[in-house]
Length: 169
Image 1 (cartoon, rainbow, N blue to C red):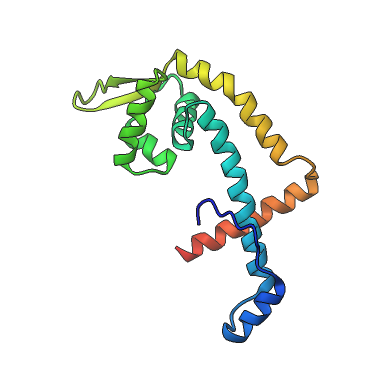
Image 2 (image 1 turned 90 degrees about the vertical axis):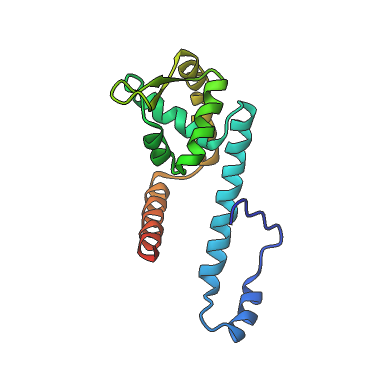
């Protein structure tokens, strides 16, 4: 459900009506899940708008970050695809776009002349170092007002949700 933007959220009463037809409905679970989806979609949209204002997409940003982490070691496109969670066919276009923007360099693989590796260049590093403080401030603003105990509980809940998702795959 990408970009869930329900303005008229279902009510507990509506779920009570549905329970008469669908016995496995748990109103608390359904309402919490919808709220979680709506909140995460709103946060992702906010980050996407910021990245777009910087001529980036989430995938392009992730690739720059992966390259930035190991600035002295170029990466194979397959490594970038794996790290960014995208298909090999997708990563080619992402790399080409980053290269056109002047943020990465493609170099022949010294061990396999048919292959290339990708590295972040000075312009890419400068770009990231300029926007990272704003990204981290955006993270802080989104999460403002949450206590350290609530963060701990939230992290445990997210870990449990991820475990459940792993078990479903």
